[in-house]
Length: 117
Image (tube, rainbow, N blue to C red; front, side, top):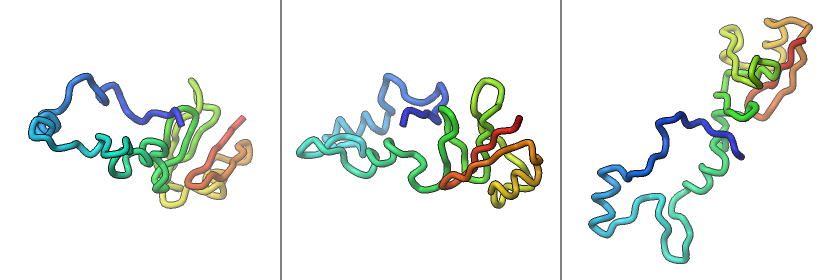
């Protein structure tokens, strides 16, 4: 998946002080490879699917949190939208009831995708 949920503050060219200190003492950070070249922990799984836990879903090039819906016709491309009436359960039935019959809806594993004409 190529979607990114990280703003401009993520990443960076320098290590954090805690990581640098641990590396100086010969300790591995959680993202470093162990023997055999495999990455330790479940970071590789999380990096490949940030919504694996069901807390979000893909919407265009981004991710929407659970309780939102994906507005496929938003200006600038698909975007997350929220309806207070449907926050507890953003299902097609709820979203269409609020937005009206001019909208079509498709259920995804966690959220819904809506197209309004």
